[in-house]
Length: 226
Image (cartoon, rainbow, N blue to C red; front, side, top):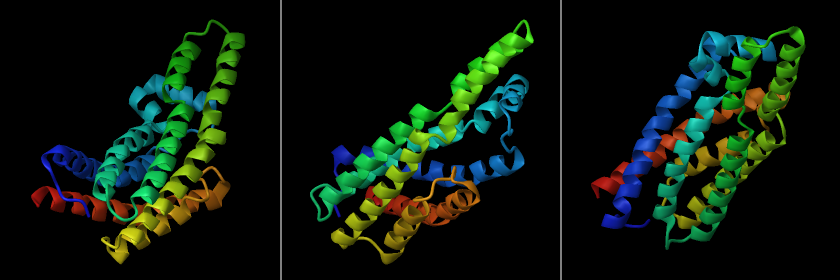
């Protein structure tokens, strides 16, 4: 694996603390999903927004957007480990898939659109106007299960599997972190929007992914300490 230099120490620090953040956010997101499940109707989402903006943003996956952006720091740090090493090209291919997937997910996020529509829905003068905002809300919420969201899942699954393969080629990573990455990538192959099976696979993917993040974060801190 690559050595730490003055140039990449900052990257490893960013990756390590981003990893800590992700490790903390995974159980937090599960708790919020169970404690405050998203409403089943657009009008219900609007009602939540008008009662509690933060909870409305949570119900429309804003935390997932944040964690995906922060996650990029982890992958950037991983690239610096692989730079100039065996498996670098495969790792770069994996990172391209990951970045494309995150971009697709962010583009499909309805959080701020729904917040804006909820405000307009509340101040609508009559049922006709409210129905227009409900229809717009239906379109916005479709992003959570639409093509971009499915592409995000497939891209991340492919990216994680490629990154795991790059670890195999590198021969500098433990069997545990490789197995965790492969398992998480496999469970990501079925998006959470694919009914009960998709939701089950989504939750199952979090177990090995958490292990993967913990072990990778540990590597970052070891790099920083030298």
